[in-house]
Image 1 (tube, rainbow, N blue to C red):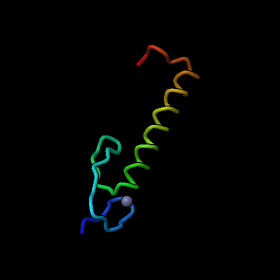
Image 2: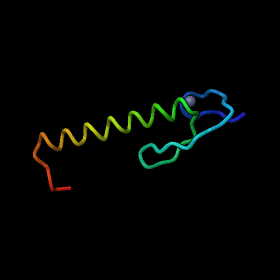
Image 3: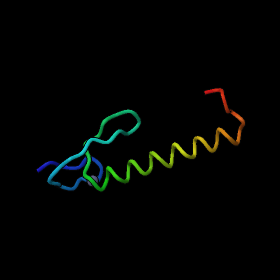
Image 4: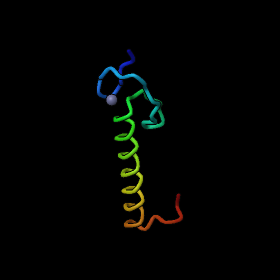
Length: 58
Ligand SMILES: [Zn+2]
C-alpha cells in the first residue's frame, strides 16, 4: 500500500501535490489541505503586497 508523505497513512491512491515547487506524494485529504493552504498563502502575499504598495514591482 502506498503511504502518504504528509500524514503517513496508508491509502489506496496517492496524488501529487506541489509544495514549495517540489512534488509530494500525498493522499487526497492532504492534497486538499495543501492546495487550500497554498491558496491562502498566495492570497496573503497579495494582501501584504497591496498593503506595502508594491503594486507593479513584481
Ligand atoms: Zn495524507
